[in-house]
Image (cartoon, rainbow, N blue to C red):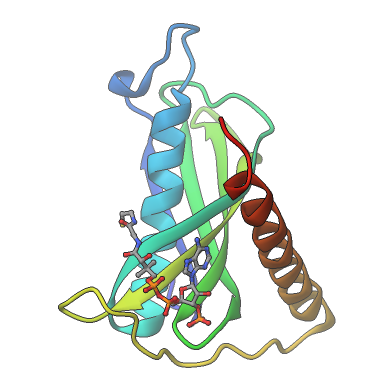
Length: 158
Ligand SMILES: CC(C)(COP(=O)(O)OP(=O)(O)OC[C@H]1O[C@@H](n2cnc3c(N)ncnc32)[C@H](O)[C@@H]1OP(=O)(O)O)[C@@H](O)C(=O)NCCC(=O)NCCS
């Protein structure tokens, strides 16, 4: 794990137990790793226990082969009063020819909570570069879309 504030990387091997029926890593395993990396990023930033409130914009770009070296990279791109908006990527390569490629990306929102599960205030993350500001705008756009989509789905029967 690195120590840049607001960023973390977890590194591990994709195990035979992570396999799907097609011989690659199961989507559910990939989603668990995304959640774990986002969780570590959020808890280290806030120094609090955090819960997942939202997962969005998830894209599976490339399959991950069992036996691959996997990096789960998470970084904060926006904070609210109690929420941390985090982009999480899975990169992978086979250890014998390791050229890391991005396999999965998503955005997640974690909320810092107290012992009763009530949201608590967190330190603010400030963008420093134009790239940071664009990522922050992306996070805010996703939240606006979430509000619109949620209002629509609430009004529909499924
Ligand atoms: C997430 C949770 C703590 C929010 O509680 P709440 O009473 O709705 O809290 P509030 O309305 O005060 O909102 C708190 C923050 O959460 C954000 N939030 C709540 N629901 C959200 C959602 N679905 N997506 C994104 N952000 C959300 C709010 O925008 C607010 O952010 P801010 O403080 O930065 O402005 C609560 O809904 C919960 O416990 N959900 C279940 C979490 C869970 O079980 N996760 C899976 C296992 S970890």
